[in-house]
Length: 633
Image (cartoon, rainbow, N blue to C red):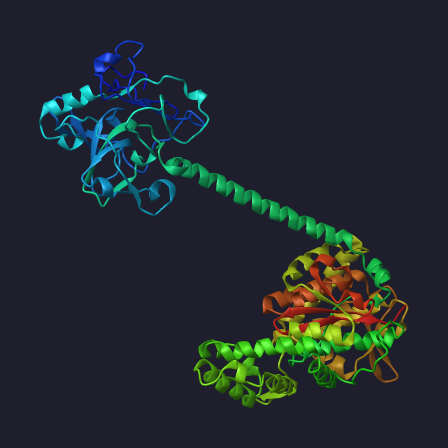
């Protein structure tokens, strides 16, 4: 502080502030009086402690510790320790801090009860919970016996006078704060000479805590509201850094939201159904097709895709081989081919070796193992116990024969509580099917479903506001009556909405085909899913169908133009909203037109297979839907 007096004590009312530059000079052979002149005499050693200016001049009060807390300060007139509030400390004061006490200001460590074991804790300043070991200066402040800092407080006034004669003091700054750019404290010898030095390890930061050592003594070097010694600039700097971090996180979040909006926008205008069909040379349906949830859904979806391609596009390369007549037979034939595929056998070998070598408790948690027949489960578990127990090694096992047994096991149909099912297959089998049947596989990324749904809704075109308003007035109340009907389960509502949506989609996608415009009421599927359900016939009429009687039979017929694209969109949204409430996967598949899905939401495998494309969607764990090609227009 520029208002320091000759004795090194600051005048009242002039506390140091952030940005002040101090010069701490160690002059063992000169007295204080020697520095009364403007030009001090040559010193044996000079060390400057410099501080950079603050980012701003206003520094908030330190709320962690009250300025009224008491510190032990030496009284030079009596060489005794007296209590002094933190807020009244001045640069040059000699302060004693006891074990577990906090440092009332930035201190230069002059001495301690155990010089080699001075540990301080600074987590309140920089978040670092590790203890740091500080060491006192390697030289005494004076070589005169009986004048060490450990003699302070003993009542012998000559000790204080001796330290004054030794030159322990602070002088006004020799340069302006604006000259310094670094925030970190810097110790630098002015002449590069001298037998003693002060380093960062002799600096005790304000609000740090003394541990291990019984006591230490330091000289006040800085009394601003914010420590200048702590790494990272102290807790105030940590507070600023935290605010900057929060700003950065907020900006990153906003950036992510912008990217997400841009993706939605690019998907909405970047993929047009007609262009996709032109590119692939195939006409595609405008929705996914579900398959039975019996564990064989993956094979069923692929079989449907390949069968549709072969039926509607027999000219495509690679489609000449015959396919089994059912998804069950397709599974058996495919697994027989996989048993001879080198890549699949290697992958199955790695899987089985893992099962045999892991801890038995971990093995018991593998769900796929316990979907297999019990005989094969027992074989794996018993062999695992022998391997992990050291009775046999993996090299002694005929792993090839075990792979054959595994493939035979996943080929079998299982039974549980009267229900038949297959072991669900996964990524390994999908990749192998691509190679064996030589087709290009496109899998929709499940993590993108919500994004795809939102983008698909934004991409809708060809619907006027009048058509949308009419659909809302007619269809939404009828659909609500279906959902609220007593005795109707959520699954039945889903089934009804799906069926009516299918009827509507067939008309919208095939406007010139009259067969889709008439639904026979006696049809078993219509009766089960729609006609017998409360509100089902009313929903058909709300969607544009008219109930008619011809030659003693009842039909639901749609006149040209009565069923619109707005009808389809609203039914899809109603089904999606209902599915979200019940946790069903129709929440996305009812809305999405697979033709408009942006390529970045697809995993495209085996591209070299060319134009035979099978597209599937993993709507939830181990269940798939397929995007089917349709007959060329």
